Each structure stands twice: as structure tokens, then as C-alpha cells.
Image (cartoon, rainbow, N blue to C red; front, side):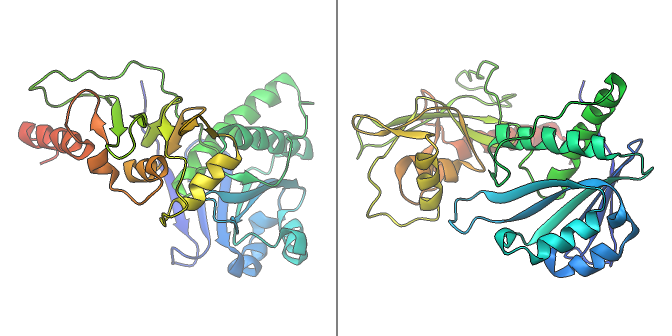
Length: 310
């Protein structure tokens, strides 16, 4: 059973663009974020003098729709961040996230382990361009401490998406069977399989499912290979997917080598078709002419008819 969680956010200077702290009930961890422009104010805070891990985050100058992230650990977060601020080799970041402990019981061994685990998780998730390279191998902790640190990692992975950073989120797993909707049915629970084809591109065929808020194009789907004449906001994303092997060159089309998550149906269809596209009307429930927009509206209408939330 999935239970709700409460996260306490505090705007330290009363503005959403300044320093923000985040805590979870019954967790000793403390998360603090700030834009680089407020680094001096962040370093002044008492939490910054503690042992902890931190994330330097900024946009990828190549425009690959993924943030650039550096994960670090230190005995004194404030001093280390001041050093990074002068390091021209790490001039990419415009925001920092600091994770410490309210009870100050995190040791150097603890944060080395946390750094190793968080780098490994971010690498596996593939949602960011990680600047650390490989994760350092560090597991030199007593059994009880290992269990505590794994719990600590779980809480960090809960808090960071709430603060707008999703690079520690697992890629969605398309494991459960798709929902098959019979004619005349509404209020479908879960996601059916959607498909996208093109009359102008015979043989092009892509399938997708919605999983945990992501629109996931399934492995084996095909995409247009030539987009040299098309200008769209997702051109850089297509290029990045080709560069990392997610899209490989086939006989006539590109092919998805693995299930690939997108933020929206339109982002997915723009990559598949190689041009700007409204995915809400391009994707259809497989085997029907019902568009994604029609399917979603049915879900909303069914809840409204039942009086849910109204």
C-alpha cells in the first residue's frame, strides 16, 4: 500500500527564488537549496558548516534537455562550495543542493558512502549528464550504518523531485500488461498502449505507455531518420538520443533500443516524427482511432460523472 508523505518546505528569506530548506518527519536529514547567486548567504547558514553531500546543477550548454550534475561530499560543505565557486572547470552550475543531518551524526565515512550510492543511482537513471564519471567504490561501513544510509538515500530521492530535480528518479518500468479498452468502456484504470503512425512515412510505427507520469516510447519503435529540414524544440533531444545509442540507425528509420521516457506525448511524437507535433492528437489507443486527448478526457469525464472531487 502506498502511503502519503509530508515534506516541510521553508522559504528562508520568504521568496521561492531564494534559499529553500526541506525536511521529512522522522528523518534526521536536512536538504537545502539555493541559486548560485545566493551562495554567500547559503554559506553563512550553520548547516553549511556540517559534513554532507551536495549537488551542483546547471543546464547543458549543448542543449540536450538534461541537466548537468556534479555530486560531491565533504567535511565542511560551505568551504567546499566556496572552492567550487572559484573553479573554472566547474563553472556550469547555477544552483546547489546540500544534504546534511540535523543531529550532525553524519561522518566522513557516511558521506563517502552516500556520494558513491547517489552517483551510481544518477548514472543508472540516465536523467542527467553526470560529470563525476564512475562512482567510487565505497562500502566500508558496519551493517547497521549501511541500513541507515540506504534509508537516508531513499529520503533524498523523495525530497529532490519535490524541489524540482528528478535526476535520481528511476526510469519507468513498463512491466504490467497494458489496459485493453473494450468498445463503449470509460473510466479505464491504468494506461493502454498508444500507437503513432504516419501516412507520409509508411512503415514508421511507434508504441508508448504512460507510466508514473512519464510518456514512455517502447523499445523497438521506429522514428524518422531524416529531420535535416525540420526545425523544432526537440531537435537537440533527438540528437542526444542518437548520440547515446537510444536511437540507432536502421534500414529505413531510426529505432528505439530501449524504453524511453518523455515528459509529454508531444515531446515523444516530436522525436518520433522529427518535427514539431501535437502528440495529444497524434497518439491513438492501439487498434482504435481514439486519440490520447480523447482517452484522457474520458478519464476526467468519468470522475466528474461520479462526483469525485466535485
